[in-house]
Length: 558
Image 1 (tube, rainbow, N blue to C red):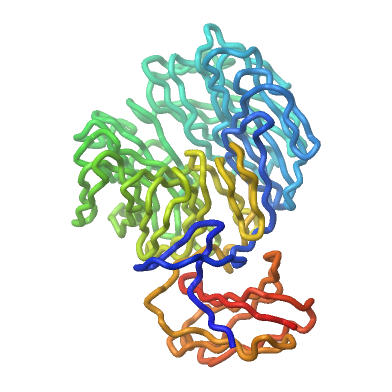
Image 2: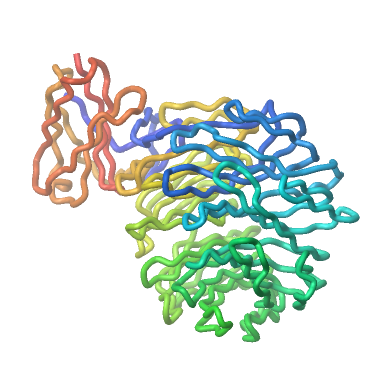
């Protein structure tokens, strides 16, 4: 008879609920479809921003440094500059299909980087945005900047990796921010130009003042329109609400105006969430600013049913719907918040509580069930609702899952990371993630070597997500397995408090982490009969949970 205890995991990170746990044990519950790493001793990759198509193919962009020839699963490309843009494709099993680099003559301060990537299923085009200076050779067109001035680009690739066209916007200080695609496959490129007007290269008749802007391009890369949307700064993230409205997350400054509407910023900086229609009318806007102006801002946003979700940060004290929140003394506090989509009224806020720092990726993802996925990194013990995570090294990466009420359902943590928040994308009910790491990192049964590298991995399904969840130490009653050892037939007994819990799943994994069985548990059952006689004899990991509560144990099949 073997007792099943609340879950611990050493290889990823220890999660506790209101108590500390003793020596961790191995976890196979976090299903990993595949995991890869690239980097040292080959050229160093800063990170991939990710997108997926309907067939499960994965596209990534970022930057690569250190020179030489890179090799992705036998596909190679040269690194010519100090830092080059990189664009790559993998199939659904993680095998690289092609890799492209964009760069040129090395310069002392090289800013080349792919920053955003989108796949358009209607046209089967891959759209990449980012920054470059000096020389950028896309294959279909080459751009050269005088005096190594900063410029931004948008490039269109086929699924086979051929460049169809590329466009550039120049300015003294110009930044690429976000990209949206409408039902007609028009591209809405959000950016910001500081101190000087943006120059839309190839379209000399288009002139707008400096500030935040949106430029609309056709599927062929022809500029249709451009307009200023902010007098200061730019849009951090934008999402479609419907065909005529955008949700915008804005890191605003004192004096910022959105389509001519004063945002009412009283500190030196503030985060703003706003809904506007595409004609330029501001429907509503909400500010979130701490008492210390420096360190306030915003990151990703998402539309989930009738809710507007945003990732923000503040420094000092901030009031949200009557609740006063406080940041660490020398750092900003990151939070996830929800507003009513049509009125802008605040609904809930979930701060990420730590004495260290938390950084969020721009990729706030939402699945078909309305579950919200947050990806980032942290440096000290982190608390989100009932969950507490201990760091691995100086910085760790984490993926957290929330429902539309702000409940943190489960999380997947790993580290040490190398101080970048990484990226996630959804691929046919699975999660693809990419993040840099700087030490020995384990994903379930897979251990990655210690190096300054980047990990690319595909995790379990979204509806049956089995990431490391909170360990509910308050639950004292143990599950029991009868008989153990056994001949492949046994029974898993449920404690009384779990017998009427909805959504329970019993999962069985072999020693490699491969899922052998997953059985839904009918409410009211006192036990579950298990038959693994068709499997090879050995040890099998058993996991029972509903996404929040999780218990594990071992079946000994002799």
